[in-house]
Amino acid sequence: MEPNLEEAIEILERTPRTLRMLLDGLSDPWLRASEGPDTFSPLDVVGHLVHGEETDWIPRLRIILADGESKPFTPFDRLGFRAKYADWPSDRLLELFARLRHENLAVVRSLRLDRAALERTGAHPALGRVTLAQLLASWVVHDLGHVRQVVRVMARRYTGAVGPWREYLPILDRG
Amino acid sequence: MEPNLEEAIEILERTPRTLRMLLDGLSDPWLRASEGPDTFSPLDVVGHLVHGEETDWIPRLRIILADGESKPFTPFDRLGFRAKYADWPSDRLLELFARLRHENLAVVRSLRLDRAALERTGAHPALGRVTLAQLLASWVVHDLGHVRQVVRVMARRYTGAVGPWREYLPILDRG
Image (cartoon, rainbow over the protein chains, first blue to last red):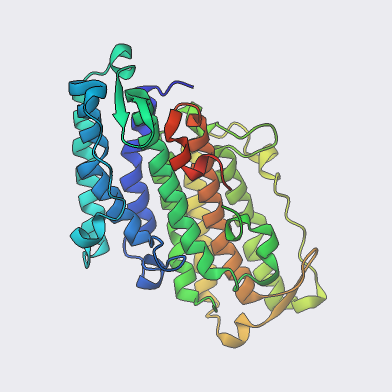
């Protein structure tokens, strides 16, 4: 299916609020839970999303519109948030994410992207040719994937605690 | 890990708000997306959670406290919501879920469950002996699992739309 711009924005504008409702005021054992070394905690996910707002989605969108495939995207540093946002409290980080997302969606709207714009192409450093429509769809799916990661990481704190119910709770063992 | 009652409540009280932020006002293609016949749409998930508030978690908790293992739980009808909440608009259903969850957590708090209470046992019709602590942990994980399901179902509307990005987006193909 083609991503419809308004539909994509419906999700993109909800993610900061969803994460705020899920995480704001939550105690540290939940916020800092992870699935092992080098995996993301819920708080890491918010840092990663903030860093994506700053360095990934909109810069790539602008490259597609300005340079097409002639200028490959800068590779995105998945862990670039660690140095920048170490020790930030969750409420500030959630607030920053909300502000940046709001600004970035204002940019998207201001560009009045039509079908021709959505078909413009760029060069992903690893994946090759991608379209602007694919970038927008990936932005949406990336958001949803990280919400999924947050709830999975939290759920798995209780893998042992649920006892025999485990077999009815696929979040504990699948994906 | 043992579920700490206050920590469990932190998650349980957030789920209605999280789902409201994620779903309220969302257009029908998102709310009614599913993974095929007999799978849950985001709206179905809310109906299922409402039905669980009404017929599953608290009634079972009360059985454990009143009857222990002598009275097995009534099996939970996963699809019991379909007849009851067919055609309910999303805002009413989300509001009902929030109200019921609020009331049910007031019940949980009013019981002042101590360690001895958390160790009380009941008889699950399929899983056998379970403890009250396991029931509370499962309630939390069940919530998180359904949030995961909602975002997965929505993400998969865009499986084709993301193009080559698919390999970086595990929500589209795993769990």
